[in-house]
Length: 325
Image (cartoon, rainbow, N blue to C red; front, side, top):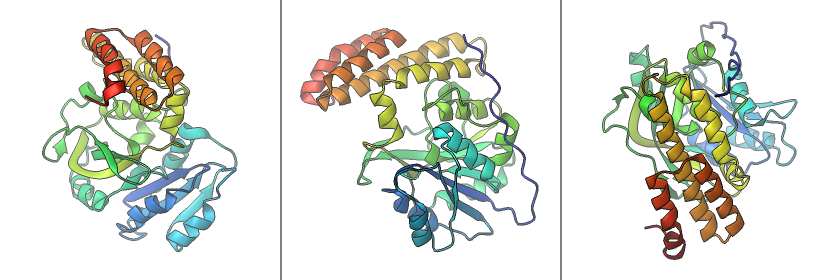
C-alpha cells in the first residue's frame, strides 16, 4: 500500500470581530454557462456581508471570463479573485479554503446549485453543536436543464448526527461538494485536499473528517450536483481515470479505518467502484460509445470480481437493449 505525504497545510485565519458565519467559495474555470444560476441560488439566501462571504475564484481561465458576469449578477455583493496560474481542481479547492474568512466553508462549483433554505436550515444545528466538524444535506443530480435525474440515499429520516459515519463514507462516496459545509478550523487541523488525488480528493477529505469529528446530516434535499458534457466528472469517465483514482483514494482512506474492519471495508469499496464502472459502461454503451464502454468494463473487472459484479456484467447486454431494469 503506497504511503502518501501529509496533506497540504491550511494556515489559521487571524480572529476578527466581524468574521462571517459562512464563506461561500465558488471555483470556476473556462465556463460561465451555469455560473449565473449558482450565484442566483446563493444570493437569494444572502443574509448580508456580516454573515456571509461570497467569492468567485477563477482558476486562470483562458476561455470564458467570469469577472464581468460576476459584476453583473452580484451587483457588488460578490467578490472576484483570479488565480495567477492554473491550479487544477484540487488546487482550486484548497485555494477556496485558504481564502475563506468565515467559520463555515461551502465550496460550490460554478455549475452546481443550492436550493432555498440551505443555509438557514443548517445554521441552528451548527450553532448548537460546537463539536460538529461538517454538515451535509441530502442532494440530487441534475442535468443541463436543472431537471433532477437522481437523488442520493437517505442517511437518516430526521436531522442529526450520523453515528459511525466513517463506516459508510469509508466504503463509498456519499457526499458531493455543494451539499456539505466544513468548519474552517477543521481544515486547519486536518489539512487541505490531497493533491495526489484528482476526482476523489473530496471523498478522502470527507472520510478524514468523519474519522475525527461528528458529522451532522439534514434529510431535506437542499443542494444539486450538475452533470453535463463539459463537467469534470464527464471528463474523468471519458479518460477512464475514475477507477484508478478511486483505488488511490481507498489506499489513502485505509489508514483511517478501524484496523479490525479495514480489510472487509476495502473489499466492499472496491466492489462498489467496480459496479460504478459498469454503470458508466452501460451509459456509454447506450450512447453508442462502445470502445469507451468496454474500457470501463475492463477497468471495473480489474478492480474487483465478485458475485454482484458478475451479475451486473451479465445484465449489461440486457440493460443496453432495454434500458435500466
